[in-house]
Each structure stands twice: as C-alpha cells, then as structure tokens.
Length: 140
Length: 387
Image 1 (spheres, one colour):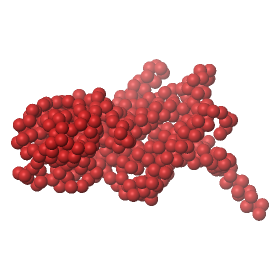
Image 2: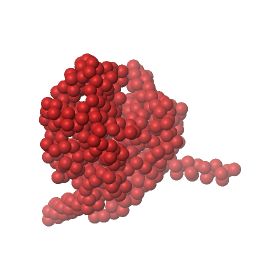
Image 3: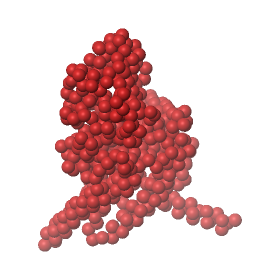
Image 4: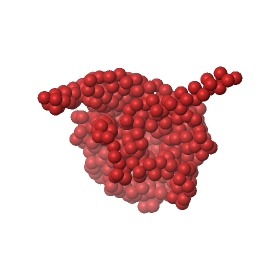
C-alpha cells in the first residue's frame, strides 16, 4: 500500500485476501461445528489476554530485571523458563486426564516441569558466574 | 474552550509518545525481520502439513493418497505438532518485539492503514488462536464450545491469508534488514540482538527436545513435557479412545461376533473370530500415527485386507468402508481407497506382538495400514463394505 502497486504485490493481496475470505466463509458455513460466537470469544479473548495481561507482566518483569547488576543471563533464563512453563501448564493442571485411559498424560508433569526449570536455573546460574568472572578478569 | 484544547494537545502529545517509551533496543525492525522470517517458515510448514492431514482425512472426490512411504504421515504430523509447539516461543517473541506499534497514535492514518492494521489484528488473533488451542488440544483440555478440527482448519486460512498480505507489506523492510550489509550499529545493539534471538531459539529448541520423544521413540526418555509416552498403554502402546469410551466393552466379547464383507462383492462373507484366525496370517511392523502428533510402532499380525477382498471377489478399484461395532462417534467407520487396501502391509489385525488385541486396541479386529492418520485405523471392526 505504501510502495506503489505492482504485479507481485497485487498477486499477494489477491491470494492473501482470498484465503482470509475462505477462512471467514468456512467459519460461517460450518457454524454448527465452529460455533462462531464461541470462536470469536476465544479469538478476541486470546488477543486481550496477550496484549493486555501477558505482555504488560513481561514488561514489568523486564524493568525489574533491568535493575540487576548483570541482567542478561537472568533475562534469558526467565524467558526460557516462562515459555517452557506455558507449554507445560495445560499438562500440569491434569484437566485432560480420563479415568478410562491412563495412556493420556501418563507422566508426573508437575515434577517434570520442576526438573526442567531446575535445569534452566542451573544454566542461568552458570552463565551469571561466567559473566562475573569475565568482568573481573577484564578489570584485573 | 482554550483550556480544553490545551488539555487535548497534552493528551495527544502523551499518546504520541507512548511507542517511544519502550526503552529496549530489541523493539527494532531488525529483530522483527529476523523473527518474522523464522515465523514465516514455521507457519508455512504448519499450514502445509495441516492441509495434508485434513485432506488425508477428507479426500476430495476420488483422490487417493499413496500408501507409501509408510511413515510419511507420522513425519508430517510430527512436524505439524512438534513444530507448532516450537513456534510458540517465536510468536511470543515477535509479538513482544513489535508491541510498541500497538500503541501508535493516531491509530489509523488513512483508510488503507486501517485495513492494514485490521489484517494485522486478524494475523495476531489467528496466530494466538492456532497456537494456544493447538497446545490445549494435544493436552486434552477442551475448554471451548466449538469442534477443534473445524475451528483450527478454517482459522488456518485466516492466518495464512493475513500472513501473505503482511509479508507483501513488510517485504521491503525484511530485505533491507536481512540482506543489506552496510549497516553501522553500536556493538551493544548487535550483542543484545544476538542474545535475544539466541534465547528465543533456545526456548524453541528445548520445547522440541522435551516433546519430540512422543513420536521419536529413541528420545522418549527426554519427553518430560509431552502428553504421551510411546511405550505407555495396554500392550505397551498408547490408546486414543478406550473401549469404555466407545461403549463397546460388552459387545466385543459377544460369541455371536461375525466379520461380514458385503456391498459390491461376488461372494458375501460372514466370518467368526476363529474363521479369521484360520485364514493366512501375516505380520507387519507399522506405526500408529495420531493427528495429535504422537506415534508408536508395534508388531501387528492378522489377515491382509486384500486377501479378504480377493476371497469376496471385490474389484481392485473398489472403495472399501470399514465399520466398527461402535454405535456413534465421528470415527466409527473409515474409507480405505484402492492404494491402501491393495497394499500388502494393510491388515485387519488380530494380534499385537503375538497376543490378541487388548479391548482398547480394537479387539477382536482392527484396521492397520501404512501412511494413514490414527483416527482412520478403525477399531472393533465388524463390517467391510465394498463400493
């Protein structure tokens, strides 16, 4: 829209627009399966939860971490830990377990997440020590 | 009136200053371009493998997928699910990077700018929707009123369409940032960017490391955060729908059980379980490859579907429908098109690892075929209809 109109650009808009229209049309045509109102609530709700809750929390954490003496390893460690926790959260809650099928969610996900977070914390601590040592050597 | 306009000016100035208040050097076009490239690749893989899975389950017209390579679906669906999980860190990092743009003021500079932002909203919403509902679905947490496959399928078109338009709009920036060398940047900016991208890549990589063992058995010991363990289940094999959930626990042990072969046949068949055991038995090693991304291999024994078809005098180009004792449910029957049922690896299996099938694995008889989604490996089979 900004850099003038040419053939590849038009082709891209045409193809992309056609796919978007197909998506919305499909959601409406299959309304008995897609439950458009429920779909819209999830669609909008996830945007609001992300932009209005998750990112502000991340920004606040970022400000707090930025005041530390060597923030880089902590920042990296917290980022990795938060992302792996998000991945594990639905399994940790165990909401999907079913009495008739023990092969669903067969592991102790709470314990496993703690193990993973422990490994991330260990890596972070080692990286922080390395940063300090390097700084001291540079000074000395 | 004058004070009103002064206040309005102040508010206006404040609003305009919001995007500039995000202090990190990582809210940059260069970081966004790099992450955007990675995301573009992973969304393309997810869209392609997702469409493949959809059309394998719902083949249009007379389209017949090949039955080989044996493990193709296992790989494409593993890419879809494990790759999809690995995309979540990339997506969250990308959205964080461009977050200041959310607060640009004025929100719309022109009609075309409004349309562009509307499509970005579709892209962001669809990306979050696909990632989060996908994650919840493989964790068996169904907190929504819609059918996951239908919603996930149609939202994929929204995502990919809005993505193509976004790429067209941003391509000049990507090219400038990633393929132009002569940029002079302070060293700490370069270091910060490398650290950040390295962190995101590590989060993605660890996501794969801790989940991929649910489909790649040699790494199953590392699958700490995977919803399945490929050796856990009756007879050492995971189960998707149990006999109890399918409501077949009694009917599968009925001594009057018969496997019937009807429809476009020369000789209709009606076989007891013992009749089936007396037919020539074959053993194959095939994976169950689930749409949810996990897969597990087993040694199956039983009769070749093509031998049964030959016995009933079914034409080689017929389409077979395999029906279950299950009363309802979306997967109580499945179609087996010629390339699959003519394949010598396709069995009506009676045994796993030499022992009769456990009820949860489809006793007395189940279908097992190469390169086919697990939901179409019909269990508790009582009928084969040729058309």
